[in-house]
Length: 462
Image (cartoon, rainbow, N blue to C red; front, side, top):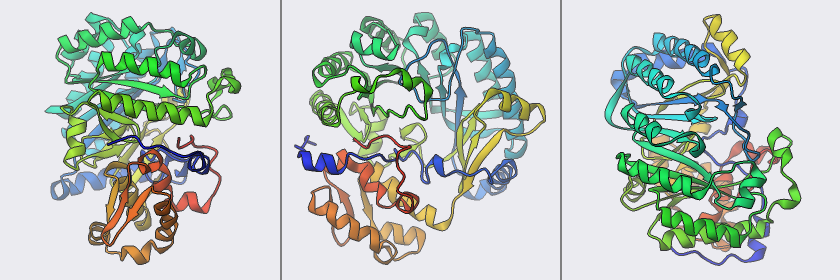
């Protein structure tokens, strides 16, 4: 894949906000009318139909605590240096697991686990061990599964990484964002490059199967020149995966971002140069462009899944795991069971209060309609495979694709004229140029977004 030249007119046309499509419908469409009773019903339906369907299961655990505030962060987090709060939180996580297992059934097979946050490494080694032991008592974490944890490089050292390996984690994700000192200062996250290099080397010595590095472009004080320097260091570091995210400046929604001065942010044209540079530099270094925000070495499981057409997308981004149910644990976490999505309450007080009452802390969610399911199939195919085959959708959902999506296909004709997609008799195919704007292509099929043109709550697609 090459990195095409994008003309300014096309950039201006698509300099719009849009979802990242880690789900469809997107989480902003969840409603409070969907509550605990609906979620419990979904769990029971999974339990009762398990033998017939054999859906795989994933777990996500949200650890909300961080010691210090990163100004760019849009995650649900609690800034505190009181580490004793971790023990209390774990006791409530155990209650939530008990309530889930009571309806879901003991010993469900799990092939994917992700600890996110916040900073999961806010917890001590003993507490992380306690968490993993608790999960293993209730779930069957199979050998060869994907067990990952997000790492704040400022909170770990060799012994901590060794403890994570002993606890069964085989994949790490280091939050780097940018190596430039001026950028780190502007976002209040100082971590020397040498520290990250040392930790990644130790991770390899300890035998972790895959190490990911997160980068963000569009941060304050970034320029195409400074980001090139960060990219050069990443290539030298050579992690197995690179996740490259566009910074979404939404200070009206995320209070920490109010500390970032808008005049310090790079313009859209510079962000595009950074994205283009990242694609050029990483692919020249041998990385496979997995899609939208992920790159991987050819030997990594993510790149292999891309080659084999097995790529999926969930709330953590691109995944090698099949399209599976996700049990989400902890404050604000989002899960999926069957044709339903659900999200937990967003504050610790509410979370603790509901669990004290013996109730699951579900705040909102939704049950997907037939139309939602059809559109989800199309959007995820675009996001993951870069193509949609009409016959596949027609057979799985019993629709006439061209009739069902007549309006959308008409809209895509304009994108075809711009070189973003190719429409033929068998399907829709995203071009190399179109990968820069794949979110925009997917947005054509988003019924909610088309009905409501208020997109300010989303990040820009470039």
